[in-house]
Image (cartoon, rainbow, N blue to C red; front, side, top):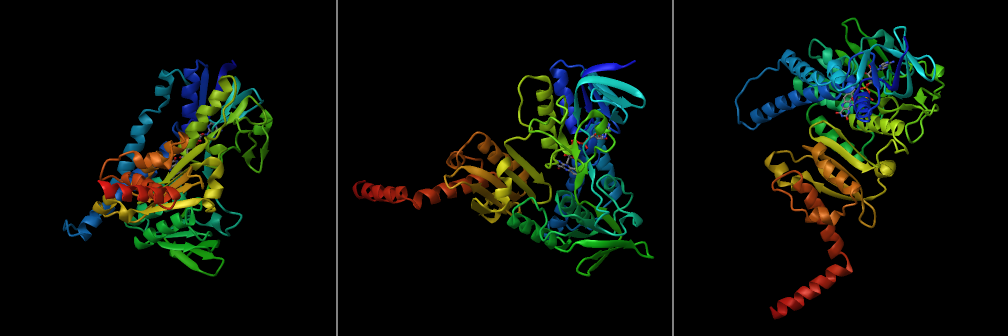
Length: 477
Ligand SMILES: Cc1cc2nc3c(=O)[nH]c(=O)nc-3n(C[C@H](O)[C@H](O)[C@H](O)COP(=O)(O)OP(=O)(O)OC[C@H]3O[C@@H](n4cnc5c(N)ncnc54)[C@H](O)[C@@H]3O)c2cc1C
């Protein structure tokens, strides 16, 4: 028998979870269809395992720092199997709250199986059909494998973010292809656990979404930790040698050898199994054509999260899951991208960015006024021996905050002060006036705002005027 729903959500990752919970809150009869495991990338192969790995590796780094500073005298050995146990435990803890039975208790129908469209109103899973008035495609993304550009990829064993967290042993020498957030986080984590690491990218700088000086700062830090950077030279060919090692050949004739290869060059929409043509949903170059309200070419079919956005982050996936349902089940429409966006790369120090979404390209091209405070001027960074990095605010000539970058311990937390300031149109001078606790990293936000305000006042007519008033006042008081 054909089951009928108000809304069917294809994919039970972050987007699907947020979407289904909101749809049920609105009273809609809701079905989530998940091909593999509820939780998607974030829980199983993305944020949760990677941040657990980053945490484990940061403890090891702290231990080695304590040894370097002479605080402890330990001869320690990393147990990779215990690190993996820790990762698995965290993933399973989080999954406990996402299990189908938990969602079902919340009123969401859950079906495990791969869905494809049979028409614009019906999907099929294992021969069973389901009909709905509205659909949300939330099938996420998968690692891009650059077969077209790199000869021999199909003949060598390689890892991706889908498989790296399941490896049985610590790689001796990990070659990481791709120096975006995933490549950078994993290169530092594996180096700290004891692997040799070479980070390779065709771009001249790591983290191509960031300003050059932000990337350069992290490059120095990664190099100082012993990670080899091979940048600005595209890989042309890979092969496995008689010893089982992976050999990587670059355009400029360099040869890099490692025990394992991780491909982290980007992620592409996972939409090929959906039979979108049967639903009449238009696709161009493997991208679903969307309007700004997340509607596909069939207006009752929405798409959200990693399968459609260029900003493949859980925060954006969640936001779009919510907006897609809001637009599908309530009158009027909201835009599918937030006006302000933030993201963080969880290296140590962390690298965080916040900015007005439609000005990101101009920020990265360095088109705004820039104000910088090095961490060496932040007392908390000094007490913690974490002085690498800086806080940077980008502003218009009129002093409006357009964005900010932070390279620092806890940057992922600190950045939200600027995000909130932009959202509420809070001026830099208000951040300067907000008395922050001392000694905190966020005091740096206030210090930088204070420096900007002070400079603006004392380089202007007002500064001269204040000096004069003060001189007269001092004469008589
Ligand atoms: C290593 C790594 C680290 C990351 N770290 C961070 C981080 O620190 N912070 C951050 O914000 N983001 C991070 N991300 C990105 C984040 O994981 C994603 O942005 C987020 O998971 C996207 O959610 P989604 O629901 O759109 O897609 P997914 O989580 O991919 O969910 C899509 C789901 O759809 C299912 N599906 C696919 N096809 C079908 C079908 N035909 N029928 C039914 N179901 C289907 C899939 O099985 C999957 O479960 C990281 C990603 C990776 C890979």
